[in-house]
Length: 306
View 1 (cartoon, rainbow, N blue to C red):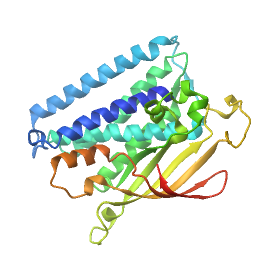
View 2: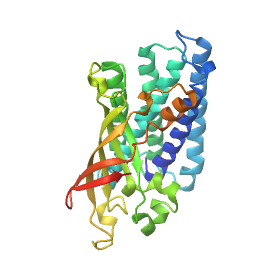
View 3: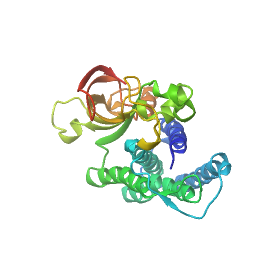
């Protein structure tokens, strides 16, 4: 799945997540103690309707403008320094998490939540990947499929092993000057750039330390986060990037980060409104002091990294 399409799906995902998390705090939408068949039907019908509508929309708004072809594959494993692959894993994780939460609301068993909910992200993104395979402009990407499986696997593995998500994907963003060079690809405004400019995106694995030692006095909300990002990405592959290397346009590089973070869902509050806000925004890595190393250049310490 390509850059613009991947980020558009993320926007749909987070909109859906916001709706779910805001509503889930209301009394009439509290999780059922046992299986509620009416709620279960509602979940399945809603998922079918949303999935069908989204796939039809993607077909009309994205693929309709490009010629069709017979099913074919492409090898884009090395594109964008794998930032798009991390984005795939991130998407599969959160779509699956939304599926699990929906089934938990219906009172489905933990086994059903994993089998039919956590796999939702992988199934949905695989369907879109197959659509890529019939487009002459792109093609079916096996590496995208692997990334989708990785994201779902991180969700399912923790649900099976720990019965909770101790390690969560998170996202942060800062604006870069690269978007001004290729605004048609990297975004013409802030909103587009958060979805399309890989140079400003960082994907994190945020680890809740208290969850690994629940008898400790560690704050329940305190996390340590490991991040991955990149810079110098104007095109997917290096050979398509014609600009000479300068201070303003440096060579493509991978970047790795170590920082602190918060699990907002573990902050105690009696306010249902705040709980809804915390649940909704928990996919965002908070700005914090951060140590950075990269494949090019010297290590850096950011007093506040976004």
